[in-house]
Image (tube, rainbow, N blue to C red; front, side, top):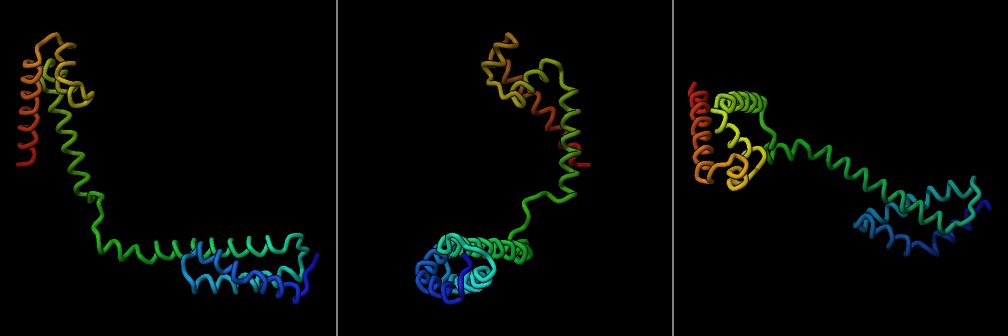
Length: 171
């Protein structure tokens, strides 16, 4: 049924307070809720004249809820867009600079070459410990050596790699 302006006004008047409370729960702002209820009335008035409405109360509340959700989305978008510069000035980016990223990549390549130059047994113990996260006990079992020997191999590997990185950093 198409609704007359008087029927829409009556429906809106009967449910205005309930509608305002429902919208206030969504947007958490009294003023915004009041504005959205008014927007709902205008939209509903335009719809009611030209559209057949089977369940007017349900459509009234659905329209209000949709407007509230649009309001929240718009607010988040504006907040994200407007605060980007402010946030970036307040807190430095956690991402590394281009220079730092390049330096890290170069250091990684040097470390990889340093690992390749390790004696085979040292390299195997080092990679098992640092890459595969094996315990000294697991490495000792795999290599058929003592845990003390594993510790010495890994320490020798660390000293070797650290020395090469320090020489790179000094250059």
